[in-house]
Amino acid sequence: MRITNIESFLVRLPYTPALTRTTDKEGRFNAARALHPTLDALLVKVETDTGLTGWGEAFGHACNPASMALLSGLLAPFFTGEECNDPAALMQRAHYAFHSYGRGGVMMYALSALDIALWDLRAKAENLPLWRLLGGTRAQVELYPSLSSFDGDVAKLMACINPLINKGYRHIKLHERDPLAIAEVARALPDNVTLMVDTNCAWDVPQAEQILPQLQAAGVAFVEEPTFPPENLSQLRYLRQTTGARIAAGENFNNSEEFALSMALDAVDVLQPSVAKIGGISAVLEIIKHAREHENVSLLPHCFYYGPGLLASAHLLSVMPESVPLEVPWLTFEQTLHPFMRFQPVMDLPHTPGLGFNPDFDVLERHLIARG
Image (cartoon, rainbow, N blue to C red; front, side):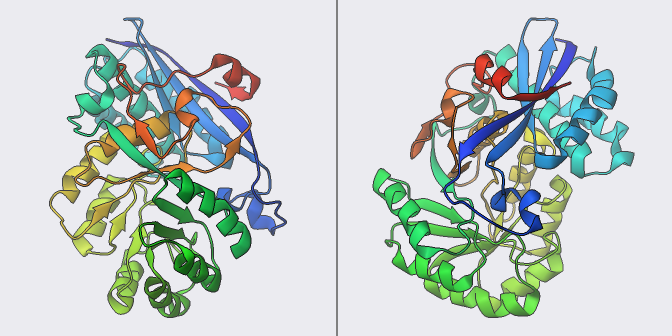
């Protein structure tokens, strides 16, 4: 099976915002505090001489055009004509060929999309759902809503959260920075609901030393990226050791090697590989392998995606050492790109070969921003 063509699609789906926000300049760049109610996805389609097609997705938001340029200008010429029956082997060659461009950032985002597409192709060639090809044992995954920021408005947060609990969701993630608001929400939730918090690197170390124990006492399961920079492992390990609070990180790590280093240093409690950022499915499989040797760390993938990255994350949960829920972007999209965007508390993993990603091409074309 050889690659014959690679195409990319930048899609921009509008959604109805839960909160009309007026933030500072950061809102132009931070998706959790976005001013504009749209979410972009960079999709990649890989075609082969067998007629099979694979789909992938790259992280990117505002930097998607840079990833598209790399895909069309450098990566497509490299991959076209190559055999792709062994995704990990082909990707290893690609990582070596392009390592001088950096082992993270937009090059890694673009490579991640291709890796996901290659695994989609491999599973289709084997006529297996991806989770079965990977040796997964769970045919269902629980979902958890990942809320956008409500700027610490507790009343509006609870008005959003309570219906989710009534629908059967048992895990909720906030993107909030006000510790008093977070603690109030945590104390208001039933005991059987797990609350997670992503601060997007809101505090300095002295602030985090004071706040983290308070949030733990209020019932917050973990705090994600409490300080800046998010990859400062010694800082995260210090906070973990001095506060006793559970710390999560990994969404902004660059590659699987940084996850291995974090495990070796015992830096965090919860590691969050993001399949469309750190090298795709091959990279996450490496992280899972390392995690099996470190019982003191949990894996809970980051997934603020709605395309093939969402489905890749779901399939990977089937092979995780522990049963953990899947993060989904809790946004009221005006249209859905594929059926798996119609979220329910539990997702049945696809039984069709590959990822199971079958986009609605009318929706794709209607919301297409660029094509490469």
